[in-house]
Length: 324
Image 1 (tube, rainbow, N blue to C red):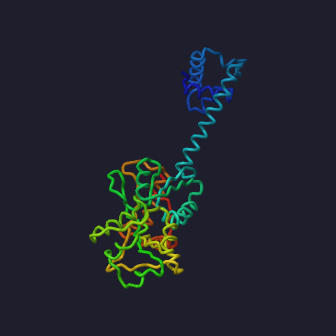
Image 2: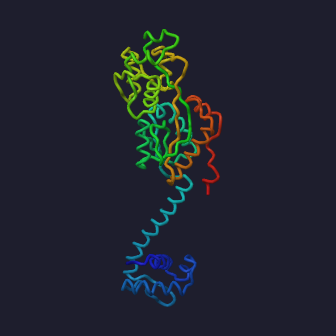
Image 3: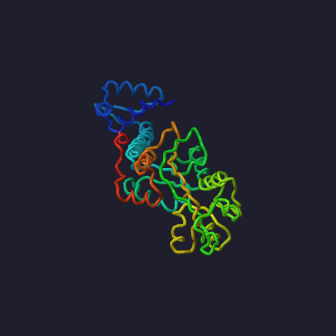
């Protein structure tokens, strides 16, 4: 087996054709270079150097070996540069996960902000239900997720991030939109186009119906928010969506909201990451960015508030502890 330390000494000696210069580059003595080369030749059972006067030349075998050694140590330099680039966030991959609503209405703004500061970082964004993103996190396919807490898991750390209002939507001519307030008992009679199992919204709505001693009349379930809005607009049923996801249609009058009796519905959104697991440098910086944006104990009131907060504060400074 090749002694890589001896190969390194050979590379410097062959590159300079001078043992003294090689010794200076390696911060060892010239006699140490001579000893290493003698031992290396013995291990290879080859003569790699020949001398004429005070000059050193490579043999044919030495020239052939030098070409291979040159490639190895050029790659070593490339590796060192890659390591330094990753430390300084000049290269790397950021693997994220979020819900479809956040992927559409919030992540483009956040990712654009992040890329202004770290343009060399490649970003992979996975989207799906909160439960799907939880499982993806546990499978190490992503490192940070913005999701609702679809299930408790001792291996995942959830940090409050935002509170999203969930609205009951219906066609503008739906009879319940004419009422001032509607109870869950009344909603129980209506066909519901429900978000898919695993969705944070689905979990929240199911729990609210149960709390009021009833259950939703699920006509259909789907993960496609646009499909839900189209069906509701056509009068096929009612649905529950994060307000931001239906804001344009509500404003345009294509959809209407049903006012619930004595309450509004809010969905807690969290920053999720694995406990006791190392994060890549891009993920560490992104997580700190999210925590700074979250603002501690008072989560932002929805995606719109988050975007406004991003516009009003600087969130691009790399924390000091991440520079070391």
